[in-house]
Image 1 (cartoon, one colour):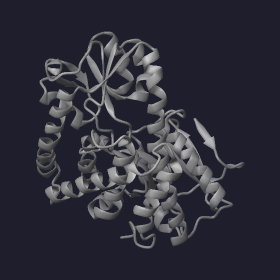
Image 2: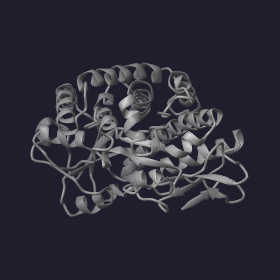
Image 3: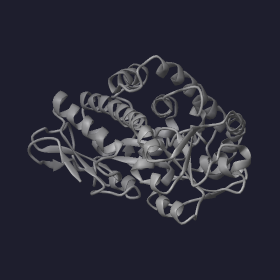
Image 4: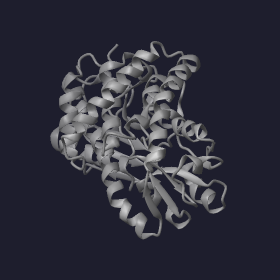
Length: 380
């Protein structure tokens, strides 16, 4: 689907464009592999509306129609789209610095009621202000990171009750990220890698006992028709491997500093929009999941404590894997930086209304985006 934000179509910005944006002849393309009803395209639409109202930059949003998730980084690099939604775990070697931080997403399984907002902000601050290697891995792909985003907490959706350490042993569980796979294997289960589109059939035909998804996806994928039980916040954490608005680097470097400043604020709005829409969708989805007949229970104290013990030990696994497999240098120090940022943002997010995009976006601007120099960021 394509959502046109302005009245008339214009030519997309091309890689060869030089100098500032010409409002009368240029329109940005924002692309994601999500359907139009999902949080990321909704957030893109809000960003495009804000750009149209507050700048000479226009945009149109493409949902599923321009590039798939697998095609998006190359599409940004080659100028097929001007900005795109990159799922960094799909590309482990290209985005290893960012993925190491994203792999720590279980850190938000406790200590916050808004894990999506906390982890998205921590990743954004880490990449833009603390990790020049992260910026460099994006520029190596001819793109610049402008925004993040995160899902709400991941939970077990199963065909039987699961809420103790003993329950996990022998379970076959679909996991969508490596950290979730390590969690289930740690407790004696088996991780199964299947696309999200196949979760319904896998549960229905007993190919897996459970799948790990966020609350909104129980309804999005109609899992309430085939699942009987849901254990909230098991394993916890969020999907955080999200570069939600990566911009073509040639385009970025051809902009004026003022235009880059505008795009930085647009990035803050994309981070806020994606994360808050996911957060609010989870709140709205829970009564629907219960009404559909799924037995929704909170994580047991026993399994919660065991998970927290796993999280501490898993940081060493993350350090070793990213050092040996991808050559990440100073991994231990970088892990400590991310840990500190997660704790910082738990405190900051606790002081705002997590359902308010405006409140969260203002916080992101104050703590991160206002500190990014539009004349220097990603310019070397």
